[in-house]
Image 1 (cartoon, one colour):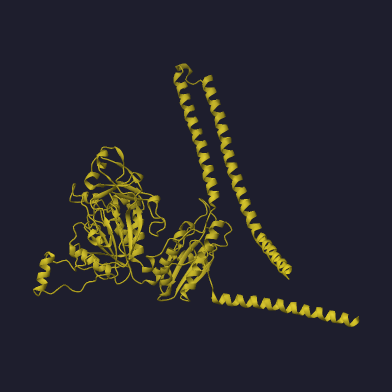
Image 2: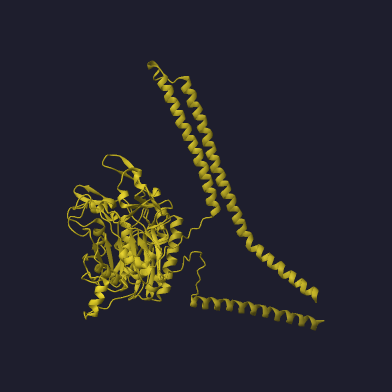
Length: 638
């Protein structure tokens, strides 16, 4: 008996040791796997819109950094008054910056700072130009810092304040910031224009003898260079060519633009079916002309509707005429958010564009090119001739051609083929047959020319020129002799955004607008919408009753004699009392609508919470029951 007891104790001891060894071994395996995984930096983006995945353009830029870059992230993390929404946004921005650091493979470092009041961090934040924002109007508490600084060598650039509203553009903003500090010289913009945008006497400019406002704004960040309208070659130093109102450009100039694009250049063209800015210029009334980029773009499958003006009731603008009358003009387009591409970096942050007498672009691009609409008409749009657009009244729409949704501005990207497959146009203007005869007679052919792009490039086409004019872009303000302008719309921002993307680092062209991290429940939004509609209906009924009561009270007031003017009659008292009762009942119904909304949302929230809490235990229980059932079947089979 004693031997048996000893044997059992020894067996139990060995089992205990085995179990302890198994636990230690398991812990060792877990620790080793964690160490290996952390060293491998295995990452996987499971978000629906790839929110944590950098675009190819950003990765390309990070892989070719010419020198080290430091990103300094300033956020008032320790400020107890910072809203929780800002803290979550700052955390997501920090995660994105870490993605940049990982892809740069040692050439980019991210540093985080908390600029508390009266600290060295705050002093440096102010030196870098970061701005502290008050959390509320009149708030005297320390402001909120949420900015980013990039430093590379002696160059530095900053984003003074990053708002949660900038979240869809975060990657673009960060990549642009890095591109700014690794670029040592200002990009050069070539301006080829038949209008005096860079010349003294610019029509309707805020100051006599000055360039147009958009050109003055561009000159702050870029070197502007005039390109002749008779140019036969675009200087290779030009990073972006702006072609404005290409009215009657010579074929040789179009060929120069074509070759510049195929050589890797980028182009932005503003054309117009009815340029009223030209009419207001020195040449006087009646000189409004039309222009189009078709000599260049037709071979790409894209054509502007030449001498045709888009009419869109959904974008009609109130216009005042010399007679003082106001009229809603569907040919004077005010494009709001629903007309703009919300997914593209250029237009995602814009609210409104104004395009007087614009045209559209039609057709499908040839193979190798991709088209992205930036601004477009509504489904009810139509085309009329530029002559009809000048007619008064509804006569202008006689014979209008329905076009539906068409692009008013678009970007074409990819590898382009020449618009001049037969070679450079003859300088003498000879027909093709005569040119061939002269070549056969021994005349030297033109120098070699490009037939297709040497690399990917991009072109932006805009069907309006007037949107660049000071008159339709900003209003002048004069205070104590100081003149400055106030934007009337987002026309200037559209130009600045597009130029910034095209003239900057090539990595900026392909950047997408990122999705949003906040993903509300569709059912909650539907409940809120339904409640809001009910509430608005109740409110409208209340306001209608108020108007009827006021009208009734005025009728009773007019019916009174002169000596009763300041006396409230019994009828007026009854009307007022009746309105008070109706107002009370309506307000009670409005409160009930709000209570029902809160109740439905809270019930839905409880259902979701219950599902989240019960899902994991339910899966474990189901798995356990399944295992038990399988064991029972195997035991029964034996």
